[in-house]
Amino acid sequence: MRRRTLLHAALAALLAGASPLAPAHRFHAGIADISFNAHTGNLEVVHTYMAHDVEALLANLYQQQFDLSNPDDQAVLRKYVEKLFWLADKDGKRIALDWVGVTVDTDSVTIFQEAARTPAERVALIHNAVLVDFLPDQVNTVNFSAGGDLRTFAFTANRTELPIR
Image (cartoon, rainbow, N blue to C red; front, top):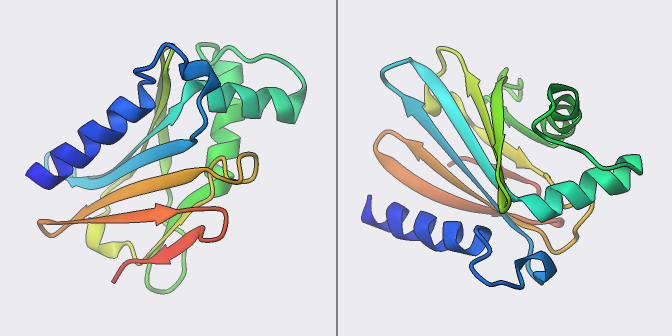
């Protein structure tokens, strides 16, 4: 648990743009945590991306500015994320992820998804290509927690899919 806390804190500081030059950052990183919530019985996915990167992506794709506090603009982001992030079971069947919501602040965009009544052990494959189509040097880190074990995976433009072993 300490390793997870330290890793998450380090990446959170990175994502928070601790530098006053954050809008001009030279690194592109995202983090997602996937874990089972025993209280709800749901598999939860929480993604965090740099707000500047998400805003630039959407502006580039649609040649307009987006306000992610607007539900219509959130729907555009949802469509993008659902196309580029997914989980599959051992048979290669995608696990249905429901969109729970999104929160936005000046530094980050946090996206919440869940799979109802789905244990983490059902996940056999993670596909994460969020932002790598727009930012070739984007690195997406996924912390996957199952059965008391935490594993960390790194996704890049050259590696968008990894099996859970």
